[in-house]
Length: 134
Image (cartoon, rainbow, N blue to C red):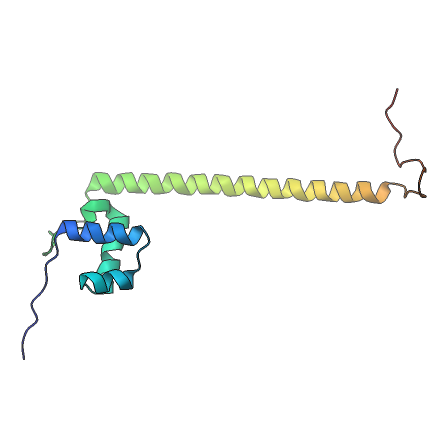
């Protein structure tokens, strides 16, 4: 039984592959072209989206960091950003709800106005409301 040797990919290769994928190139085509498994390419792309170019670290075991790999300042910043985003989303949802209430009100008012108008008796008949001509 032979043991398969682990391949090591440079950061530049990973970055180049991710840029091609983000530009729209098919993962399958790129996988065949580079001779790299598609799941590797997908993982690199995901890491790039989450952490940028720094997410495409070199091969090897990452150093252990307390608290999931983020320093306390970065974690606090992300938490603060997330809270601000949630607050903003709630504010926008409230505005959308208010706009829906107003839209329903005006649609109902328009319907009542349409129902209250006198129907026209044909050509030359007076309109349902008087003209404002002076």
